[in-house]
Length: 456
Ligand SMILES: Nc1ncnc2c1ncn2[C@@H]1O[C@H](COP(=O)(O)OP(=O)(O)OP(=O)(O)O)[C@@H](O)[C@H]1O
Ligand SMILES: [Mg+2]
Picture 1 (cartoon, helix red, strand yellow):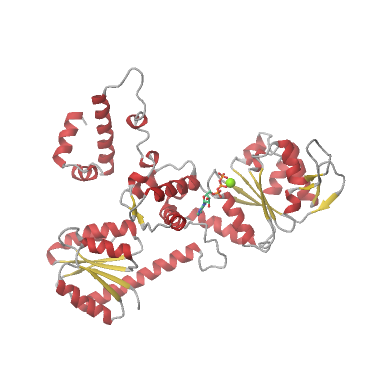
Picture 2 (cartoon, rainbow, N blue to C red):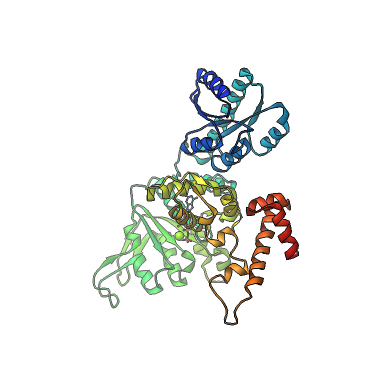
């Protein structure tokens, strides 16, 4: 047993007795005499299990619990409580504590509870690892996600990577289509062969043909030399036809021929060359609809869509947001030489309630920006863009840099702003005024006064 236990208690005797006893059991014990030392120890890590006294001067055990749940959800928390406060202990369980121990402390009980906590933690981690397939046959480490929707994606990916099947990846912009295409190539038998990507939407139609198939010298103005196309460059490897939905019907016919005959013909040249290429294509338009509208050839659609993979939007996999956030914090920590441990309270709420029209790319940008702006250990709400903080829809915010020619009534604008803030806080606090006041950093009585004045 080498779990790291952090013991937080303001009573020195309890700290000593428990750390000796747990040390004998084989735990690595670290102690802290109050809540703020506890937070520092958690941030210093690693901590697997936190045992904390409930009542301490300064930061209480409950607050420490909340901090831990928000920032280190994998840490098991055990509360120590006096007989009198069993009710608070139950609240603690509701808030995510693993268990509680009542005073006077009985060593056997502590050992037993810790053992259970270890077992639970190991299960949790094992589960996470399994889900993340970090130990699985295939390593899609850089594709983060444990949601059901992503599970389906992983399971299809596993089935296709060993084959040469043509794959069509559909998903909104920023959902990870290119990432998945690369993972399929780089985990398969062609991984040491070229992966050639081409964005069909970014290249004008007449050039696209020569990009794809190459051309012979003099076949058109500007064709000053013989040039191979992307299909030839991808020979024995994979070609990634990105945004295939924007390809002209004329070129669609040519792609169909490549798939059927496994041969290409350079623009302006009669010679046909055989190519062995795995085709992975992607689109953010609904191709079936495009087929119905006559914009996409149905025969090509069926050829490309042998194995369909549909990537969920981030909105459909909100449960993956905390993992993705941790993943991107790690990525940008490394890139910028920072050591940010996580997000402060409130941040995850903003992130999980945002709509994410730009999906994972947008989330990644938000985290990159936040990491840049953060000097401390935790990303604060203020480091998020207004739109993610959930305030940009507010008229007052929208106009904050713009005064119309007719001017504004500042008093009225400020009132509207206060009303909007108070309403959001009340909504978040489930209508509990003292909670809302806490969220706004004002006294309950002040809140009540303001609400009365604003007619809320
Ligand atoms: N599941 C994921 N885990 C980690 N990072 C991801 C995941 N999905 C996407 N990303 C990251 O998000 C960004 C956007 O992904 P990608 O370029 O693959 O999306 P796309 O669907 O091709 O977007 P577009 O339609 O805009 O071209 C990339 O930086 C990618 O690494
Ligand atoms: Mg893309």
